Amino acid sequence: MKSVITALLLALLSAGSQAVEIAGTPIDETARVFGKELSLNGAGVRTAMLVKVYVAALYLQQKSKDADEVIESRQSKRLLMVFKRNLKSNIVGAAFRDGIRNNADEADLLILKPRMEQLERAVARHGEVREGDRLAIDFAMDGSVDLVYNDKLEESIPGPQFGPAMLKIWLGNVPVADDLKNALLAGANYGPKAPKRKSAFDSIFDGFSP
Image (cartoon, rainbow, N blue to C red; front, side):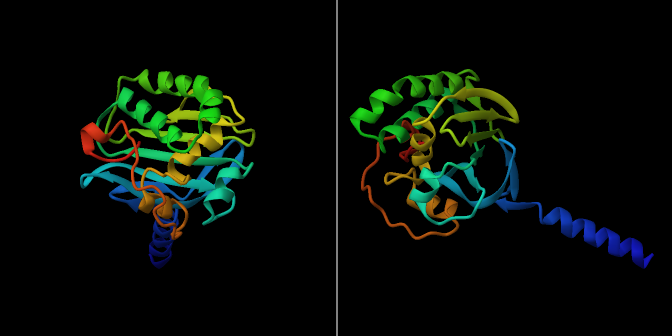
């Protein structure tokens, strides 16, 4: 009997080590992306007007608190979003667009425009994201991006510029939220660099993008 209890305790401990809970949302501690085993670097909650919008988690091959290092790295990465409320898909797509624009100059935007339009079309297909839906944004070594919606590959967007541009939505000089940037970067301590941000969410939450 003792051996059975010990085995059960070990199983529970093992299961518990596989996930952490953020705002009531279980987040896996590892992810396999493009054949690479990634570890959870950090996770946090995107809020607007005290409303939880989504939980975000960043997975890397090596843990880091350096935003530029993560953005410029040619290693596989994942940014996972788990939505905490229902949202119109066109708002989510527009918010991604605004997040990219906040961190790019005019020359970069001319290059990125076709990719941004592809992103918005892909996100808009569903009409609405529902509470509990999971969008994994997988960043490949060549700068391309895969969108995986509820464990199904939805779109592949080529690089090389698009991957870093999209990652800057959360980790750039004008992130969606400074506290979320620091949470994703394993508790880094970046201070505010942008007093004002434009967002497609402003009219809904008076918040920032996305």
